[in-house]
Amino acid sequence: MKHIYLLFLVGVALSAQTPVSIQQQRASVMKQIEKVTGKPAPPATSFFTVPWTGAPSGFANAPCDPMPADQLDQLIQRSSQRESVDPELLRAVIGQESGNRPCAVSSMGAEGLMQLMPETAGELGVHDAFDPKENVEAGAKLLKQLLVKYDGDVSLALSAYNAGETRVDREGTVPPIEETMNYVLRILGQLAKR
Image 1: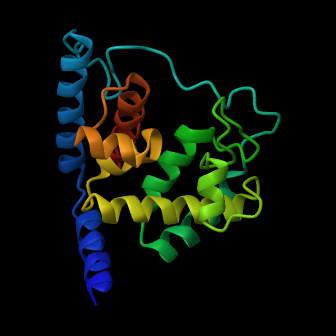
Image 2: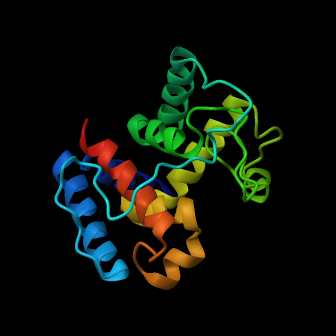
């Protein structure tokens, strides 16, 4: 019964994630960035302005094309409904993690569309991390678990997806890791635009 109640609470928390609440989370992360970098955030010339530049490039050299949008949309919709995770959150994570390339492999060994580490993929029952269906289903399941754990706080769930739960639990907030802060800001920025 407690599990069902928690799932209900996460569903309510996710549906309450309005562009305003996403912008508030983004503003909070920007304050953390200023504290960590010691630099004031630059004037917002765009919603995505951050104190450093450069887009993720780990997937730019992947030896495959991005997955066709119609096929990816079907996977996202199915996994979103199955796990009760916002489809736009899944879409943003996939875009940020792999550039929609199912063959992407990070320098740390994360694989596929949602860049699952082999150990995590195994724990989630994935047999082939490069199979788009398996990868997106497992990534959606992982995001759901993180959203439940962090009471629907998207910025903490994204931080844990990127930097690991141990680091987020130790810090109690978005960890002061440039890559993680940038990751969270980019995805929150995409979600706020919807």
